[in-house]
Image (cartoon, rainbow over all chains, first blue to last red; front, side, top):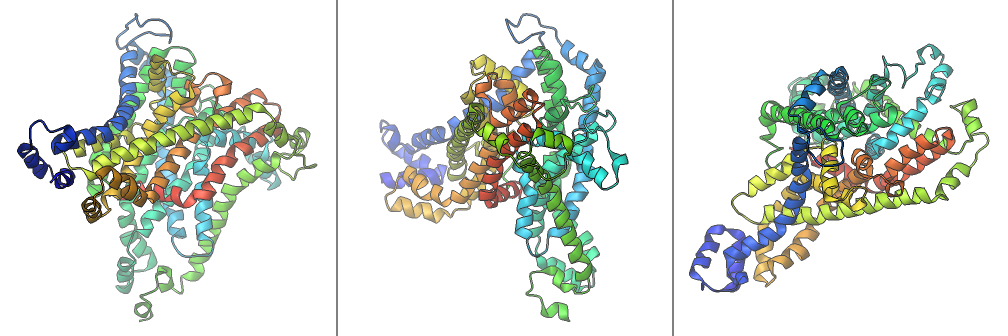
Length: 330
Length: 290
C-alpha cells in the first residue's frame, strides 16, 4: 500500500490526492503522498531556483534601483536624482557613439559572418578526408578565453608586428595600417578579431543543422531534375532556416554585450573609436566611480537585449520552434 | 538512372559526378584556408614565446633565432602564474559542481514530476538565456558588494553557476524526459526508493548529457573576464584571463614574455577542448537543436 502510493505520487497528481484523502490524517509527512511530493519537489527545485533568481534576476533589480541615485560606490545611497543618469547618458555623444558601434558590430556580425558561416558550412557538409579534424580546428578559437584572444591579436597587430611584416613580405606594404590606433579602422579590426573567435561556433552549429536535414528530400528533388544549386536554395536553406534563426539570436545577444575582446584590444579607444555599450559602462561608470551612472547603462544594455529578444521571439523564432526559448526545445 | 541505383549512398554529392571536380577542390581550398587562419596565429604565439625580445624587434615574422626557453621557464617558475591557474581552476570547479548538482536536481523536478507550474518554472530558468552574464556584470558587482563577497573567488563562482543553469536545463530536461518511464516503474516495483532510482539509475543514464553540461559550464567559467575584472581586486585572486591581460599591461616591454604567457594561458583551454571536443561541440550544437 505504502509502496504503491509512493509510486503514484510521482506519476499523477490525481491518484496521489485520492490516497492522501483516504489516508490517516496524522500520518507522518513521508507517508502522505501529496505532502511528500511537495517536500521532494521543494528540496529538488528550491536550491537551483534560489541561486538562479538571486544571481540572475535580483542583480538587475538592484541595478535598476541604484540607477536612480548619484552614487560613487561608497557610503549611503542618499542622493536620489530621478532619471538624470539616463538623460545624461542619452545626451552624451560618447554614449550615442558606443550604441552606434555596438549596433554596427551586431549588424556586421549578421550580414558578414552569417553568409560566410552558411557558405562554409555548406561546403564542408560533405564527406571528405579530414573533416572531423577540420571541425575541431575551426571550433577551437571559440573555447579560448576572449581576453587571451585579445592579447594574442594585440601582439600580432602591433605596429611593424607579424601582420605588417607578412603584408610587406607579400608586397602589400601599402595596406599596412595602425590597426589598433587608426580611428577609422579600429572598430573593424575588432570585428575581424571577434569573427576569428566566434565564427567557428556558427559553422559548427550550422553543420549540425545541415546534418539534421534528411537526404531523401534532397535526393527526391534531384531525381525531379533540380540541380545542386536549386537543391541548396529550395530544399537545404529553407530547412536550415530554424538553425539560422537561432544562430542569429545567439549572435545578436552576444554582439550587444561584447566586451572582453574589445576591452583587451583597445579599451574602446582610441578616443572612443571602438567603444561599445559595455566598454562605455566600464570606462565612464565603473572606472570613474560613478556607480549610479554605470547601473543606468547596465539597465539600458539589458533593455536592448530584452526588447530584441521579445521581438525576435515574437516574429522570427516562434514560426518554427514554437517558442524554443520559453518552452521546451526537445 | 544512375542516381536511383545509388540511393543507398549517404554522400549526396556522389549524385553529381560531374560537379565533383568543381566542388571538391573548393571544399579543400576553404578547408585549408580555414585551418590556416585558425592555426597560424596560435602557432605564432607559441613560437614567438621561444624568441628573445631583440629577435622579435628585428623581425616579427620569422623563425626564432636563437630558440630560447627562458620566457617559458620564467613564467612557469613564477608564483603568480600558478596562482592565476589555481584560482581559475578553483572557481571553475566550484561553479561547475554547483551547476551540475543544482541543475540536475532541478531538471529531475521538472522532468520526473507532474505538478502545476512546472512549465512556468522551466520558462523561468530558460529565460536566463536572455540575460547574458555580460549584461549582468555590473549588477552582479553591486550585489556581491552588498553581500560582502567582493574580491572573493567563491563569490564569483556563485553567479557563474547561476548563469550556467539555463543551458543546463535546456540540455538536461529533454534528455531526462526521453528516458522511458517503464524503467522507473520497474525500479519502484523492485523496491527502490525514488531517490535511489534517481541517483543509481536515472543520472548514470544521463551521463553523456551531464558530461556535456559540465564541460560547457567549466569552459564558460574558465573564460570569464568581465565579471572577474569587476569583482576581483587583489592580484593574488586573479583568474588566468585576468592575469594574462594584467601581465601584458605590466610588462609591456617584454613582448616575448607576453607571447609565452599568452601561449601558456591558452594551453589549458585548448588541451581540455582537444580532449573533450566531441562533448563540447555536441553541447553547443545540441543546445539549440529544434
